[in-house]
Length: 589
Image (cartoon, rainbow, N blue to C red; front, side):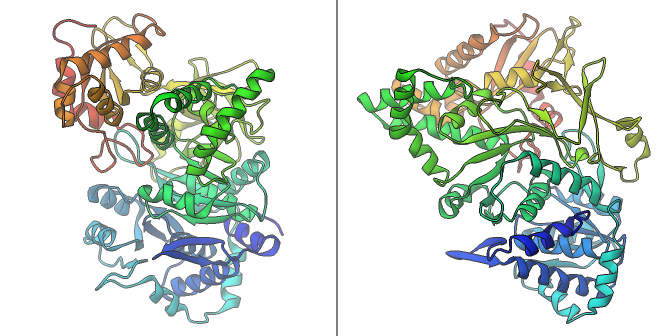
């Protein structure tokens, strides 16, 4: 069968790799599973129900929920009748939800639970008719099961005709980018955009079709996890949804997946826990553990060590790395990372533990994957985002900006011709990222073009590069470099409080709270020393001259991180403007 529409991928699984566990979610102490046949049948029944409710081709339907099978079932049902899905991040403020609902012209919405039902209901309350259905049982709210019942047995011939009428170039979805500044933009992606990318990534990635399992925890409202799930459909990989971020570790231990996708921030958290483990050890055991970490952080997959090197690695693997693998489910073979820059030492650490890490690069406007690091040790290039997919062309513009073209590039921004014209020029997507190719054709991202700033001395600073390097410190959790229009670069620093607390105990400092810790001169001296240690890697104009310590991590809930865990620089700058101003008075480092 020809695979040209997204819903063709699940039917391909049914024909080639039917699974009893196509989609799965926690249900009490066990798992609630949909077989591949269940997924196809339920999506068909939902399509009939949506038609009975008056949803037609081109209508926009909002989805706001944490990851669950029902999200994908409704998504497939909408696709088959030519309706357009508009996913919303569960963490969006009501005002942003209202803006998207109005801008997209939403006719119907599905919400995950009571809290999300209340928020999307508030966001749609001004509309004359926009019913909201829930996936969870919520008192007083209509359930998605009612949509199933509305369809009854439906009219299969009608649905078949509608399904056949959907073309590859038809609009599939409008995804509003979370953005780090300003109002979100609605990225229009066609079936062809998404399917062409899914097929290219499938050709690139050594998956075991019909056998593997995957854990899904990145939001389906983001194109990365959603597109990867479509790849799982095609490859016959069972998808297990973690209930939330806090449930990831337990889900990995329960499911024992071979693959999952993640963002750098979550791998940083895993790394922090692994490093923190040394504080529980003593004597020779602690020294051995520390040596294993040092070895892993400098591990080079391409190297071919001698006999002594192999024996050392085998010792570390037996005593340390095997336990790391067990913490990730014991069966993980590969981790695919995207959304932001990954610290090279984290890639090395997981490669040392026998887990392939492939850092890729993409964006919503590219459906989303543009490049990826190859999955074999001989050719992987740590510190880069790898090579372009086989149907993607990438160039570096004269100003250093990365531009791309291919069948995966978006149709444009919904109802925004000006922004579309700015992003798409002569068929090329202007990414807003700055980069370069190495001698082997691997792309290296040097910074976000729009995040670069110029000091009052006229020097340009790329903050993300500096931030990523500073986060290699065992005592720094989050950091944002500032200095636009100022004399020099400075940094807001969130310490890694777990490590810092252990250090304070070692120093005999009785500091209980985070606020007490960041106010203590010795703590400040420690962090300043760490910053100076990394400053030598940068030009004088790039070096962080002053720091200000923050007493709590930045979060999605507080609006300081985007749902993809990227810094929302504008929000942080406004919220901490007094602290930022304080770094430009008095003596610098």
